[in-house]
Amino acid sequence: MSSPRRRIETDVMKLLMSDYDVKLVNDNMQEFYVRFHGPEGTPFANGVWKIHVELPEQYPYKSPSIGFVNKIFHPNIDELSGSVCLDVINQTWSPMFDMLNIFETFLPQLLRYPNPTDPLNGEAAALMMRDSAGYETKVKDYVQRYATKKALNALAAAKCGKDSKKGLSMESDEDDDDAISCDDDGDISSLSSYGSEDELDMSE
Image: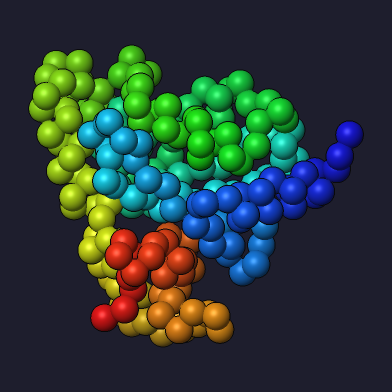
């Protein structure tokens, strides 16, 4: 049986070597951000979300903490905190699962098949059950407002501007001159790693 520390390193390295854009917080493998695209064929398509991940010391025997940083309209995701209601993470997590399972399978399934009977967002759940077309319209509206390149850039700029007024320093990344980093409360990390030049270019 591998130790939790070795398993954390193995799983995070697998994620770093995958096609996902991953940004470690202070080079800490137990806290990082991942860029996650909405699955095709759903109203979440064309959206990109910044997912905050924290791995507990007991990982993989204890499930990771997963949260959406930018807003999403979904019955099982809290609009304000970004917390996720997903049984496989919150209740039925197994050491057999890893981080790739979360981003390749569990989160895409959550967006494809919302469960309005066990909501964290009551408004989204009610709208989905009452008016599916209206629900999809509002999901797409949130994608355009909060889950685009422009929205993420504005989120980063607003956060960094707020922190700079408090006298907090903006950390720079030696390998990325265009990085924006404001980690005071974990909401914003370097977003320049969250896309290519044609997706999430952080240049002016």
